Amino acid sequence: MMIDLIGGGSLGLLYGGKLAAAGADVRLWCRTPEQAAKLASRGITIRDADGGTESQAKAGSFFAGPLEGFAEAWTARPGRWILLMTKQKDTEEASRMSAGRLASGKRATDHPPGVVCFQNGYGHMEKLEKLLPGWPLYAAVTTEGAKRADACEVVHAGAGTTWLGPAGREHARHMEERPEELVQMLQKAGFSAVLANDIDRRIYRKLLVNSVINPLTALWNVPNGELLASSERLRTMSMLLQEALAVYDASGIAWEEDIWDQILEVCRATAGNISSMLKDVRNGAETEIDWINGAVIGLANQAGVRAPLHELMVGLVKGLSIREE
Ligand code: KPL
Image (tube, rainbow, N blue to C red; front, side, top):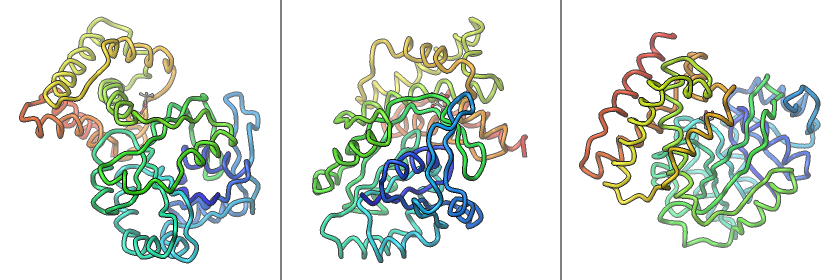
């Protein structure tokens, strides 16, 4: 099964490495030609949390190339699946760059490829639907923990589950892509992967978790578990959650009664971890705040209500990124 995987970050290396090691025909597209060259000569090493080798995709067992080459290579030899593992902004840019060529390539194939988005938050899928009209879009939610060590090496910090399911209004038109085969391939590669018919619900639930944990860990500069350290912190978290739940109610989006306990459980289970947003702030990288708390604000706007605390989070976290530069 040919899989084009876009993004040479922690998830791209983890999935690309394990899929290639399991025999999938992987093409890994990364932002810089330098990383692509290193991957082509060194392969991918996946380490376990103790530093041992969990698995390895040898050089030559997969293709690695710079993202500019993707659309041309895909048109010449279309793959079955495109897994998008870049940040939201890069995903939109890559899709915009490639959309025209991919669309002409798609017309030439019998089986339109499925596109799977692994990004946090909400909002990028709608943009993708517009850029790739009629493409079968999938969303994936994963709890895999991975940390990139260098261009070719990733630490698999914690095994999780990957849920994958059809998303987007256009989806029903194409069912030929057989997502169960991709799920089986992921399972063969050692992932706990599940085909979900309720992926929207999972995305909305993850949005609640991320919209509370991520900005606050970034602002307070603490690992996830430290959010539980004082009643003031818990109160701030609860206020953010209540505001998001009111937005969901106004938007007709269902939420689970025990969502507060779920958020506390994520803090406990990932107590020593640095959230992705804090990591970005510390690295001086652009954060996902527009797709997380910004997504809550977007839903509020659509429903004609306000979400001032989430607006405050966006303003403060963006201020943080600027200060770090
Ligand atoms: O998804 C996460 C993130 O950091 O983006 C959580 C669940 C908060 C774990 O760190």
